[in-house]
Image (cartoon, rainbow, N blue to C red; front, side, top):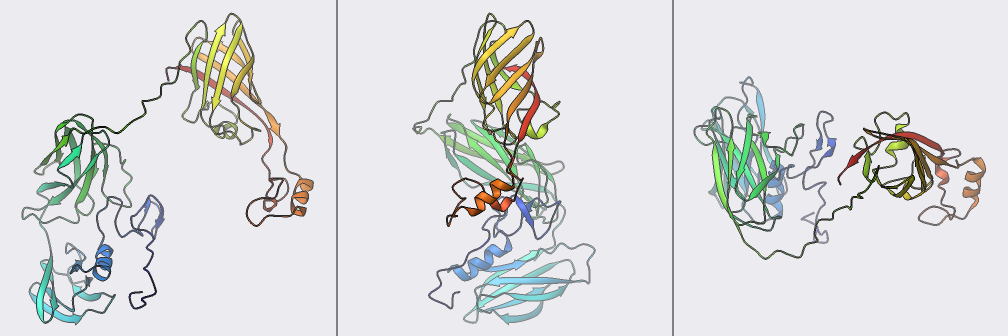
Length: 418
């Protein structure tokens, strides 16, 4: 592309690694590896390839690391990314030859592994202008931590990144260790995330600890709305800990909307706010999980006055086997002894009130299925260039594939405060 002045540039899929679409490896990998930068923002070797040819910064990137126990005598591919004119490679002080750097390319040597050092020396105009090394490291000895910022705004939003290196006694990053690092934050700030860039790591990004990957991990710390000193400590069993202190400074807060609080009905009997058991708004005891799962979250705001029940049913989602939403204003609400019944939207609720909650049977109006006649009519309609025909039916699904059928499922409600 650089040889073609009419080309504006290239497209990289993607700049960062990202969750999902693991490639080129599959499970247990949980993220892509296309990125020039990993999930944490740590640069990969490819980062320096682009830096070599698309910036004016002199670059000499030598890789991989030089910790390969058990592979003594085996050939290791050693690569160099650089925008210098010539690069010479050394292994334990012995030259393995110099090579001219091809434009937009790289250099490579196959080196028989022996512990020690590989070194690249980069030349420009016949002079060495850059050199870099990869050394076989010792055992992990301590943690080194750096913050990308020394000061945060005390606005409850600003974030600093604390990167941790696991190093040996000489201070070299140990690239093949996975020490568990624990973070503690003291002061007006919160630990909001941890990471290591490992595409096979199944640890949570929310927590106090993270294993190192390639000798690296990190923590994200967010300011509160109070000014002061914030100290972040990183510890790992058997290693010397690290500690960094930054400050948060008072600032004028930008206009903010106050937190919304849902009104909770108060009164006699079943008056109050109710939610179904289960994270998806459905009882785990249902015999029709598809019907419930498609309905999203549901909140019942109930008001009882004598034998009358009023209020509303708020439902996110909808669709699925339901023709419309299972929510709406409560109509025909009655409570007789322990029996309760009401309508909301296109859905009928009947059930029983008990001390531990309310059990409801939810029944929805059936949705008409698409038949052959429907599909045939859709196919005969003039189809626009973009989007479905006027009837809203996509004939590509074929006959009988429209969603339909009535829905009936059991909900067990529990009283809640929000």
